[in-house]
Length: 292
Image (tube, rainbow, N blue to C red; front, top):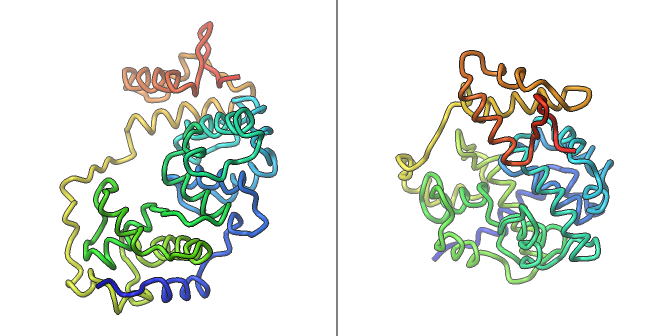
């Protein structure tokens, strides 16, 4: 039988949880939605500054939906995966068009918005509206994989079994479930880290199945893919986007874009074409520019 993990984790969070700005009770559902999109595959430290500027500049879905795409991409800066910025703008337009400018509180409605998947919908429902829902991000999956499953890391992709396990641990009362969700997520971010976990400071150390099993190695390691950043298509895409953002008018000569990766013209051309396919860049008359 799985022991009650909720109380020690929530108590730990009360002592150790970070006072992140989107955790402020006065934070709007829109600001929480923006934070969740920005935090996808991006560390908290890199998000706080851009998030603060975004919610100041575009405090409502309608304000972002009306903003020029070029301004949105410039404000996104170096957060990475800039397609998220345009999808967030599209989500703002969807909220205005379908929900009268109010961020919906139901997961099904949230998932109908561009760029909003099951995790983000659950997180907004929980953290913006206090609903009882399973919030299953990478950090939560890792904590539960170790503490309950005895695995070093969760499977490369979420499984039905993981979701069922998370559901079984979720407190029955909505406010308690919200506290559990944010607490276990924070535990994964600060203590139960993928690399060099701080097991000596973990409130679940006495119950952890992974610890009890002698901290076995990652059984999914052969299925995980890793790629160095240097020399990748993603790096070249990022370099072209950085050049466009820094240009006064958001435009550079096409030849300059293709010279971003010296000696790798084919890669630069592929990167440029992929940016245009994603709606992140537009080419006309020998010039590449940010979308208007």
